Image 1 (cartoon, rainbow, N blue to C red):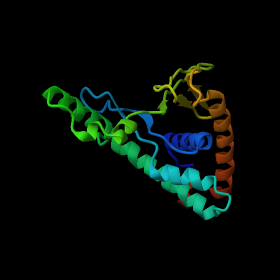
Image 2: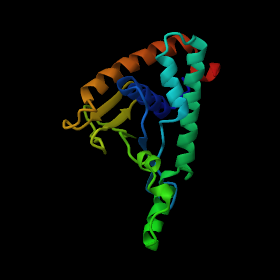
Image 3: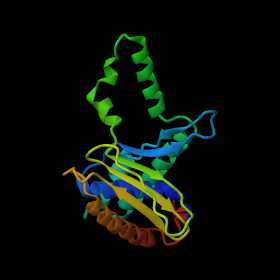
Image 4: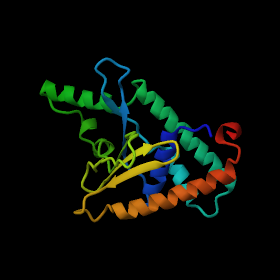
Length: 207
């Protein structure tokens, strides 16, 4: 099946979060910029409008199979585009944070865009994720939440399995690692059933 494993996992995580909380949130997915001199990381923004549309339609009992299939393909395509753009230096996070820090250096105060509620929410990540490939058997990874009411979700895809590590703060009444884990299991099973029915010959051939 010709599909980006990372795109697949990310839209599964978006659907899982939607099932747990009824919405999507600003999501962090680490993107390595090693192709650039002194490059470090940027953020692949997985919570796209297409991912939200996909999550909504999969929860709609009245949605047709073709509607779900198209929403799935659109979500995959969008995530792959965002991922590719970010890896080639076209992500927004580093750019916007750099502009904000340069404004700090001027000593003239911040433009309204950097104090706006929307901007602050954009750079607050209730769902923080990263692909952390591990090829050592029986090895787990750690990836923590970055806000009090958020989740950290690291994942390691291999040929025959995907290992997830889910973390949240016990002190939060808004996040629940056990709920997220159980919902993720159900969502992965539902995805398997969906793909076997809608793409019996593989996604590439039918897209």
